[in-house]
Amino acid sequence: MCGISGIISETVSGGRLKQKAAEMCSLQGHRGPDARDACTCEGSWGRAAFGFVRLAILDLETGMQPIKCPVDDTVILCNGQIYNYIELRPQVEGEPFVSRGDIEVALHLYRKKGIRFIEELNGMYAGAILDPVRKKLFLFRDRFGIKPLYYVARDKEFAFSSEIRPLFKALDITPEVNEDRLSTYFIYRYVPGGQTLFKDVMRVPPGSYLEYDLESKTFEVRRYWQYHAESLDKVFSLDEAADEFFGLFQDAVDIRLRADVELGSFISGGIDSSSVAAAAAKTHPEMKLYTATFDEPAYDELPDVRRFLNYHSGLFSQAGLYPASCGKEALEDLPDIIAAIEEPISLGTILPTDRICSFASRDVKAVLTGEGADEIFAGYRKFMLEAAAEEYRQLSWRMKDKMREWFPELEPYLARRSGDPVQRYIQTEALFDESELDRLLGRQAVSRAFPEDAMPELTGKEHPVNAAIAFETRCRLPDYVVLRLDKLSMRHSLETRTPLLDYRLAEFAARLPLPMKLNLSMNREKFICSYAFVRHGLLDAKTAFRKKQPFTFPVADWLSDTRSLPESVREVLFGDIVKRHNMINPAFVRKLAERVTASGVGPQTLVSEADRLFSIIVFTLWYEKFIYR
Image 1 (cartoon, rainbow, N blue to C red):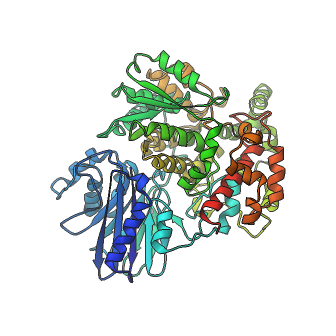
Image 2: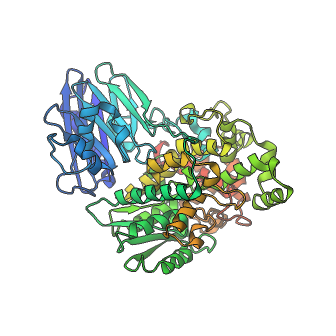
Image 3: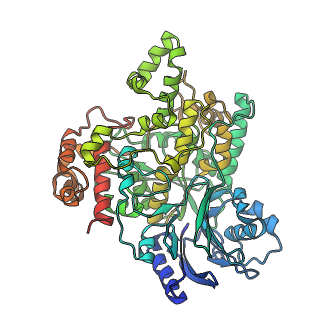
């Protein structure tokens, strides 16, 4: 929706600070092409400047930020949207409103209730509030970190921003690698937790706020929301659970349709985006639908999308389907994609996500998407594998045969499966093992521990699947899945809205018995979602119970045909760039490139040689863009 930035200093003049804020805005112009503004504040504690770039979605005439309250000079600026602002506004009627939108409602709620106001918000948001009376600056972020927020703290300066490059500009920082997290990236394909792969650049964690004391120049980070994956406090029948889920889901979609511009929706052949599009079409039958297509049949979901739309032709009679082709030429865009994400993320969805966002942004400013259900309702194959491993000893020999048939990787996993939930999570995620990391990085001193601040709050009594869900929602979802969605959609000035990440749905999922989330005997993930959508007539059974198709690109097919790779990728595999950087072992990269094959690799493959190689390509292009001098 927009981009925010701010800088606090004791030594820099107000005029220079405002100029710095404006420069930070310029680096985020893609996040807010419609308008930009900056303001300054001053007190005994020093000076501050805030910048805002706007993508106008709601309250087009009066919704510009930053917003300052004339009563006490409290200032707010926020990236995202508070979807339940209409329901919250009666609490602050009578306050001196200057806008009709959502963010000023949050400002007056803060003035009335203090920082705990964020517990009442339902939305995607990353914001800042300057309170000159209390002499505090608060940074706050939504429960799942759908909107990013970074900061850098120095002795006499503090800066924050929706993106990283403005921080380098504001504080005259030369980017450096955070070597403590280098192996972390190559294990998980991203860097979980509060640190980034840039030295000294930190994230405000999801579901948290940062309280900065303007006088002492000290700060603390506190969590206001914690996802507890096993909060069983109610006995559900299956039908009762399905009805409650569906009511929450429909409301989550409805409040995300609040906008003053046309909305579209992403759609694939799977249950998540199909259900979101179908629920939205009830009130927006003319909605434009966008889907990514591939030349490789195993990855292409267009036939499934068309079958679904034809089956529900009455609901989608006025909708238009717009396929966005993602062919091998998309690799040409990889350097620009990595530059836009800023953090190295070796995720197969980055190419089709960028392509479909670019395509949709030609028509609309905002789209609905299906992200989130896989994490909170156990939608990944690894959750089924964990359930099979946990139940294996108690199964009949017939079911054991089925488990081995459905999960060929089960027996090797059982042989090495740890009893510790942290180690189990690492085992399911690890891209390179210890010996491979030693050969790749050539440095054993780099920390390989899972970051403490990325760990969920566990009691130790959770079912292993629920413990894995807690890890997913605490780190992989915010730091990997939705980070790439935000950065790539905003690269094309497109807002993405995620109804399935409504926190009410997550809290509902935590109360469900595990068999309602995944049905091991039927080999079905997200069982309650499928059942509820069929029960309420939103999806046909074939779509609802379709086997999950991972949203990725044919990485093995594309990387194994080295002759047609773009020059930037060929330079990583066969040129001198890796040797020039002197960060990873060139010989290891060459040998790995030689082993990549498309044989036996498909959308369901969890880790292949191509996935390992892609992580190296992403890191090398990231290093070349941001670090190498």
